[in-house]
Length: 199
Image (cartoon, rainbow, N blue to C red; front, side, top):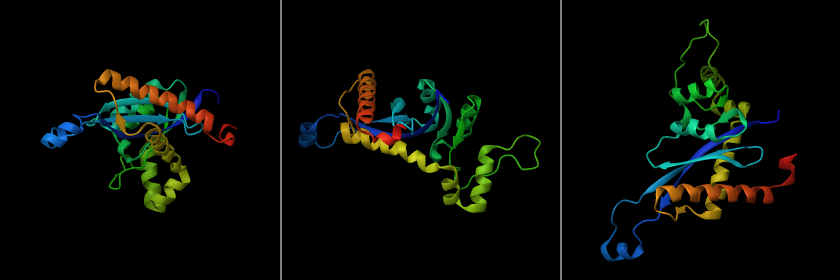
């Protein structure tokens, strides 16, 4: 349907330009290196970045789900994320928006609602049951979890084109720098992706 898309999400670290090579050579390594964390939501059909959030390196991936979805102009049908997103608040946020979710439960995950409950079965519980029955690999294959790797591919393209270093030192200009990189990468994708991906 028009305006309905899936998103795959992931995050990566970007180094912030530090004190400079001269000071390190003269006085040794100074304060710890600073990193920013870039969270991306990618449309797996077009490979375009549809949302991004830049945070400090302590921010948890699960806390960026709603800020990412708030940026997506289209209605999101399915959310693909790795095990970092296996948190109750993520499921609640996605459920409130009517978004289907494909997130692998943690290896020690427990069923929250047993099968004889009157309520509708929870998607996470059903995933746990299938993993216990068929194995994690079979579960991933059966639900198309491999699509999530397209977020990693987008991160690889971003770093290949622009490197893993932020040039700006001020938080506001770092946000602008990242936004420009994402827009440029989306242009590159439209120019360079195989035609069959658009059919």
